[in-house]
Length: 313
Image (cartoon, rainbow, N blue to C red; front, side):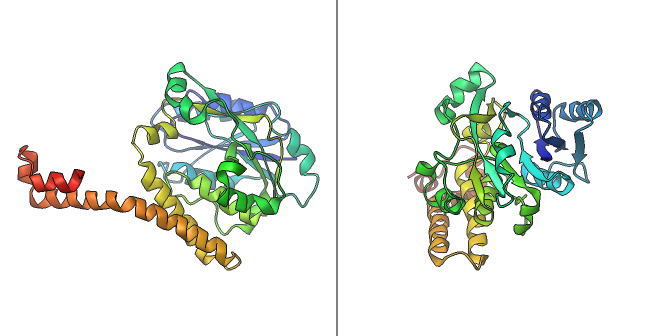
């Protein structure tokens, strides 16, 4: 079993060494592919040092050496992977010693195209725990019981709350099976590109549960990871969910083998986010209009009463 572990790196100078070394502990890991995504911190020299220290660590950047996001970085990793299997790891997360225990056995069956497991939570600081414990608590992120592979896609689509879900950190895929997908990650999605990818993946591939009653990897929670950006409104969660379901709907309507019932369900999901976003979009249009036509009144503090009524009530 030769596994390529793909790690996109952005703003992770404090964590990437731990992530890499947690992957290198396994003989099954054939290579660790670091995609340095023009980090504003000291991540690049740390990645360079890791690639020089460890023969199995390979470092890549985008051709223009710019910042292209997690989706594009994972795509670049997939293009350069040479192992028979693909695994993913975020640069601020890490693998546990049992990461590939189930995979080593399950992948002896050539019909199994992917295996997913459970991940736990590690809070790097007390501040992070205090701030984000209400989101993750100490629970596992996992599919709650083992299901036949044909139930995984509808379970993820219809029953996420009761079915559970799996994440990239706990997923291992046959590289050959990825040819069933027309494309990998949608790079233009700044958030939820992993959710969109996993949904399509569970439709095209036969995925099996591995270790789901204990973690095989840990999600690192700290003040500067993506979930904190959503929480502090640096990224608007409503907008990102709307963009996610727009992409899922585009895929569903163009997938000829998808049932009409599933296509309708996905279309309704997308429409529900459109409806939810409509009042917000109207307010932004209103703000833009007033900034253009009545900027002097707004900037001078003489607020138009009608503007305030329409914006806030």
